[in-house]
Length: 282
Image (tube, rainbow, N blue to C red):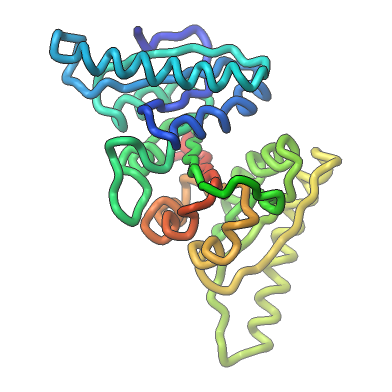
């Protein structure tokens, strides 16, 4: 199979892991909304073209893809499914494929790339270097989370808040969730007046940005919150209510926080999705 396609797609990295399966299932609605194919890609780790030595890996790849195809078809959603088997290194291959993708979706930890205390090496590399939006999907063990109905948009740098809100507003509307946009800051503990003033100013700035998106999405439920502390700390406290967390690639420190050890620890056990957007402006 090859990587040449006539149109962009929602690309999902498949490696046989449960998280990759969850990534594919999450990605269905993205493909349906965009009216583009769901492209399932399995990377066979090799230096080039298939050989006799890679025959067992090819057989495993086909089984993994077939398993995911059956799961996607079982949802009975109107999505076009494509499958690819690509030879190369997983992260480098997905980054290359991302040039022609609408979004790349991967599991937070793959079947062979687990690093204790952090998101898998493939997910971390793709999140930082892809040419399109990246979704990193956790696969929690909680069978039912009816209260997990918040799309969290992190906007610590207000210069880039519009790119985050563009995706966040669509996600919240499509998934019938509440959009919560936050800015994290460290207030002076010894100055209550400065703390109150800072919270008011931050909330007012965020509300001004939200008004634009409320006018474009009449059903959008949105709120602005000034957070005292770090993003990872907020995730630790609120992970149970989050469907997804959206950050911009133009704030690499924030990306590292949600895909690093602190973010992984905060979201481990949940089925929250980390969305990294705005790579094309880097």
